[in-house]
Length: 363
Image 1 (cartoon, rainbow, N blue to C red):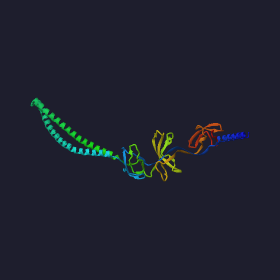
Image 2: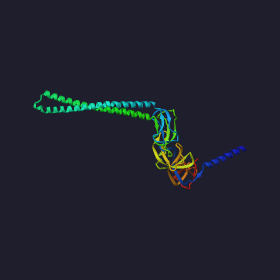
Image 3: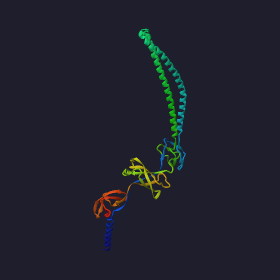
Image 4: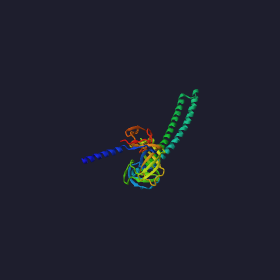
């Protein structure tokens, strides 16, 4: 019986303590409340980009090392290009041959220009004879047969002249097309050969080399990461449900795992107006007001984008709110309230509750 009594007493004490805990009571407080939007992301270098090759092949030579300063146009990687070199050489030979052939065509053009001039001179004479006989035909000075002979001679001269002009035009066009085609083929081959040398798009710092010599690379394989030296920004992801609240110029409070216990401030200065369908987030960029002394690409960051701040607001803990619109008064009586701003812990009460009233934590 003793043991049973102790057990019952323990149960009573447990029930009393639970009831007391479940009926925690507080009164609303006046204070400052800040509404913010959570975002997470990484540190990026200004103009940071990943280097890719436009061609596939065996990577023969890596000309750079991580941490090196890079100049615009500097060759970073060399890819095996024996086939491209042969193609370029063939194109160069074809271009040289076309130049030789062009001299022959130019001689033909000069010859045809002489023919055109002779045909033109004959046409002028035959046209003059034709016009003269046409005018005197009505006076029966010339027979019909003779007139038709003169007319036929004129028409033949005109046809010969037009044919010569057309042939001359075709020869000039042939010369131009041959030269352009072979010149373009050479340029294309030279460009294709230059693609086997991967160069930097701008000056900066080489952060990482992602491949090794002897690797078979493709146009989808990242080769290196380059960005501006000592210039960094925040690249953050914002959930689609919060994105409508974010605008340019908003203040951001940032924490970094590399600087535990420290808080940095930044501002939103770029919003990408398209949602990532996989993560359902929007990307934004921000710059530090006073950046940390040392930063590196891909450091993780967490941020709160400040939407608005209100002083002297009547607030209660979120845990005392029921269904986002009710609070408990007199322990078991629900009262509807109107809420305003809210942060991760507290919520502003706009209507339905006064500062001196007591509310209870829901069970």
